[in-house]
Image 1 (tube, rainbow, N blue to C red):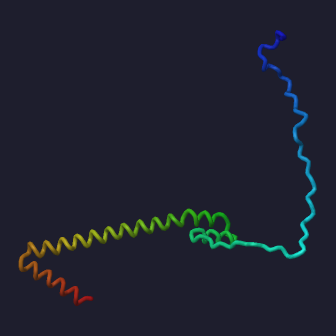
Image 2: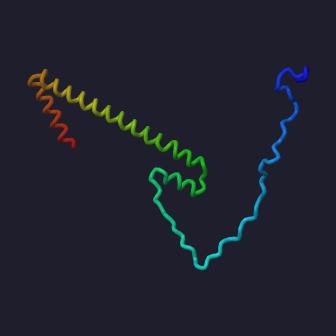
Image 3: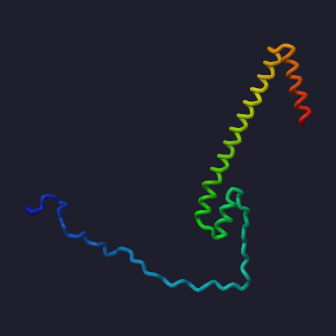
Amino acid sequence: MSPSRRYQFDNHLPVPRDPHTPVYRPEPIGAPAVYDQQPVVIQHIHQAPPDRTVQRIALGAGAGGGAVAAGVYFGPLLVAAISSMAISLAVVALVVVACGWVVVTAVKSIGGPDGKAAVENLSKARRKRG
């Protein structure tokens, strides 16, 4: 070992290449197949699942990736927002009905004969309206 080399990895010469590395050599493509008869093509046609139909139509119409992304992202988002609003409105309606029932029951029980007459008048007025 020479005194100038401190470590075995101090060799600055390039690593010799392996002479047997594979080299790509293109080969000619064979001739197309010639059939005596018309070949039978078996084609399976499947119906697209309903959640992808809009995206497939958008792609087929040439609308591009933006329409597909919007359909994929905003479709479920819109459904979730509308469902959330419907649930909120249903809860509010339930609270209003419960409060009305409590008020009518309280007026009947606390008001005595005047309260019962007031409830009767309200029910008659509702029947006349509709």
